Image 1: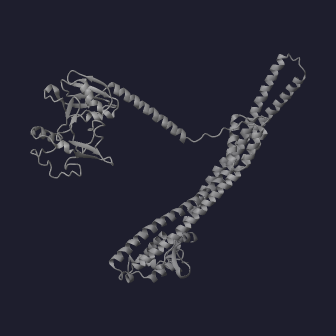
Image 2: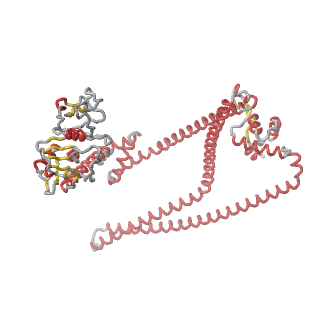
Image 3: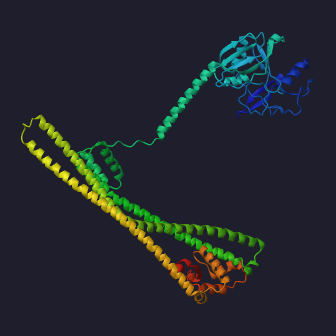
Length: 601
């Protein structure tokens, strides 16, 4: 007899009970059937050992995986096992029947797709003489049975209390059931267990999903409330005491933002009236005093940013100089005097290092040139703005005057409308009283009429002045257009005159210029000047005469260093020589100054 035991580490082993091995050999067919059901070759029917390599100390037979218990009490349905591991099922003995496992070599029984929340199974292949009591006896050890619906056609539906019990019941699919020890066909059958779809299961599953969704929504709501930033504290209502506190806070730089928010809320609420207008004006005035502080802070930050830019530019130029020195070292090492003494591997490394250094140097050089271009563009923008500002000052002054007159005109018109309304109200009151009241109303009416006449006269004067100013503005605009046209004509005349002078001078003295004043004597020297200018324009910090000649030697090996230096010294407005470095690193460098020389000549 085979027994399943659990060790301390929760592993399972299959042990052999020596007392159960005394099976009588008088029925060899039963012995072979039992061995076949266990998936073993039926050897040793005559009494010899079943397997020669069986080790009783291991408690397991070679080639057979351990049998896993199914449930408490029944002891054959396992927890989930790997799908690639074959499971050996054993015989199940019940009170009224016996279950024989299927052949392990056969494929597992097919099942339908599992419905959501399935707790009901379909059981087919029941014996014809099987009763509901036998069904309960077989399947109650898989879990609590809620209901059984048995049919007359040898199948039934069983509903369990939980979903995991269905998996245990599916383990019995394929077993052959035999009632008692009878071999009659009505007392035998092959069980087929499969998922069944029930409305009760689906309803319970939907209720559970809705409950989980509610819990998830509640959890998310609680999480959002926890992560939501706290609401700002409520703004206190206006009072003289609170006004004095806010006024003190407005004077403090650290508490200014809080106090100005309170002030804004009070003004939007409509707390300003005749009694509190002076207090609000003083608070607004103290808030206005912070404008200069903010402007100064901005200027300080801009200064810090400019200093940081300048430091970065200086550091970048220093790094670029060091890169130039490293590249010069590589180029000097690549000359034949030193190059012949290096091995192939060393030459390869030097050439790779030289390429990498040149690439990094070019990247840094482009970055520095980009910074300089940005600065030049900013300077040009500033100049353009200054010129446009000088042109627009006159027009802006006139426009501001006209706008001021418009505002004054509107204010006078509004005052006139207000006086008219007051006069109408007084007339209505006077008509109701039948002009029998005290003479003060007549005096007030006369005063209002006089004021109304004065306002009308003043309004007429303002309108006349406004029209006069508009006419002056139009005249000034016309004069400006005429002046601009005259300037354009003068510029065209000057350009034509300069062209005529240049052409006459060129026609008078063409030979003298070419023979006496030209420092370039041949086309070869002109080509050299163009190549050197391009090379030095790429190197804004200059380059030594050896560096320039090493570049020219790549184009022509016959170029002499002294000839190049003599040619560059003749062109003083195109090239200039400077001393760079300190102490032992003192070095003469040639720089391209053609753009500056063009302005001078």
